[in-house]
Image (cartoon, rainbow, N blue to C red; front, side, top):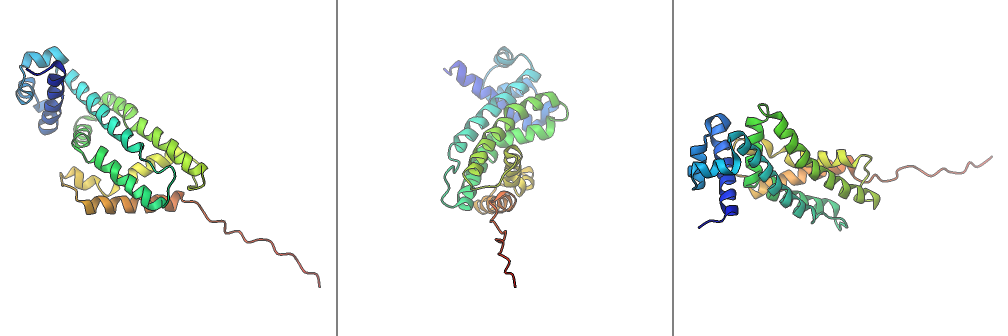
Length: 216
């Protein structure tokens, strides 16, 4: 017999799958219960109604994504030997673990299909999901700037732009349901990091020293 936690997880996973496939209006509790392998009453007992279930799905998947994101942030190159190569490897890990995985796809689809209908729900997601990741990444970029590896005035903006850049080449393929290849992930991360470093890389001191005037 499955535990309470196992049933809860199966309901969340089934609901995420059904909401993404059928849309909120097309989804129903009977279908979700069938995919979860539980009774419709069990779904109601856990979540009450479809609106509450959608909120629970977004909250649960956001929490899962955050856990993976912070695990990857723990591998951030605080003391890089080769800044470009180390940031490229970090970007690939972040995309693989937090953006291109199953939960990341669920969130992306739900935001695309339900964000306009339920902006308050996804305002909470933005604060509790990306907002926390931006802040943590900004602190790491600030440390790289302090140690002389980067030239950054606004670490928060740099963090947001880094995340936007590493996704830039992947958004359309992911929206179309493509299975991303290693080559696509590597190329996207490399292009993103090179662009990022052109904006925030440490500038060389090109000022010429003053020459002493020689009086005739």
